[in-house]
Amino acid sequence: MDPPTSLGDLAVRARHDARATERLMEGVRELALKYARVRFARFGAEDLAQDIAQEVCMAVLSALPTYEHRGLPFEAFVYRVAANKVADAQRLVLRSATPVAAVPDGLDDRPGPEAQAVTRAEADQALALMEQLPEQQREIITLRVVLGLSTEEAAASLGMTAGAVRVAQHRALTKLRALMAAREASVVA
Image (tube, rainbow, N blue to C red; front, side, top):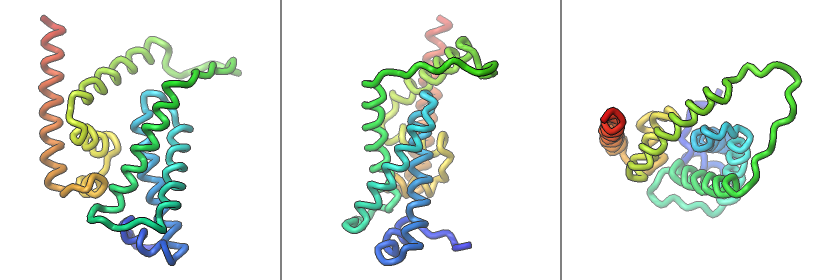
């Protein structure tokens, strides 16, 4: 098994090494898939997340020959491509019709409409609170809490230091707690 290598190192080697290209695309796909799954979690759109990850891989692979290191980690480049592809897909999803499910062959043991509505309402509340955060803090919470990336991985993806990510994450969580407390206080009052 090959030792772990950063995506940036693989990107440099991938111009001349097919194995490095393969490993790079595996890493890019994993990062893009995690990001897309989080962004489309409330829609349950696994197929769409897979499609986005594939589009990110194709975009990164086609940009690889002209990619120039500009001081930011390669992960930040991949993350930006993924964010753009997700935004494109969100626009498409919001404009398109929702297909109707086929008649099921057997019993459906998934949560019923009431449980789905409660889950969706809770997710919408959490997303509404997160929307009140600055964009950078929102992205840090997504990468760290939802995707489970390490501080170093999130820092590399955002082009920040690990310390700056920790501070921004702490501030974001503190603000979210305050927003939740304010919301609960207004509901009780």
